View 1: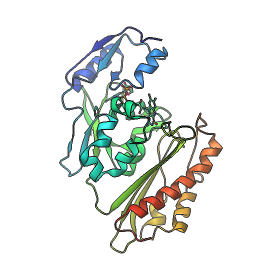
View 2: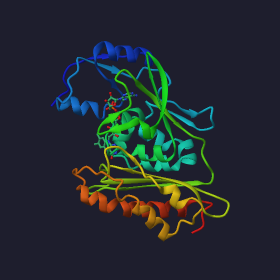
View 3: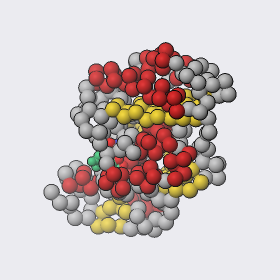
Length: 292
Ligand SMILES: Cc1cc2nc3c(=O)[nH]c(=O)nc-3n(C[C@H](O)[C@H](O)[C@H](O)COP(=O)(O)OP(=O)(O)OC[C@H]3O[C@@H](n4cnc5c(N)ncnc54)[C@H](O)[C@@H]3O)c2cc1C
């Protein structure tokens, strides 16, 4: 089925885009990988669409003032995955992006479109939350920033107001003593949405032990889940098989999986701790400081 007719508006600033969205009660268009298929299925039939493609600088990836990296909302997933600074300083993000769908989708899909979509199964928020990233939002009313874990509020529900545009994502300064791993389990083909995904980010200390750790689980609750109690169990400890099993056990009671085509709620509860244990051990193996 074709896409229904609509008028394309192409503002050159995010403030103007925000005004147009309010005036026409519509939404922005980025890579179109989610919107266009929804329009084809007649799930969404707008008279106007506001393209973000002519807004200058919205796709840039550049060092930030705080020593980290700013990724513009219109940067495609593939361009970020392949960006030399991302590969060198934030390999966890590059690894995670490489697992999203296929190269064709990743060349169109954008970072902002991915977050705004708000799907509970998205892969990139796992790495972004583990890395401590924040999201910048802008509208005709001004700008604000939020931690990514506070951006996702519920099932396909985010903290973004209707007239707000995602401007980009800010990553904190990279840490030479850190390592990460994203482990995605798919039930059918490797290019599928995750049944469950686990992102781990570990910092090591000079005694060869764990200084701090973040574990984020995707597709196993209504929003990406930052596992609670991880630091209490790992800070100052060796990352042994026993320690990894203990942290995996924390999933008990914290998950709230939605049954979908990739697995039942029961299956997701069973597979999540296995993935957490394996992802933690692999992240520790990759860490230059942590001794196993
Ligand atoms: C075949 C296929 C397989 C996929 N598999 C996966 C997968 O395995 N893992 C995964 O994580 N994702 C997967 N996806 C989802 C994909 O990542 C999203 O469709 C994509 O990231 C959306 O980005 P986009 O730029 O195409 O957004 P669009 O389709 O243009 O927009 C999506 C939504 O975001 C809004 N929006 C877009 N940009 C902004 C912005 N800057 N500010 C505010 N709102 C905005 C739009 O209004 C719309 O509501 C898959 C998609 C397809 C088509």
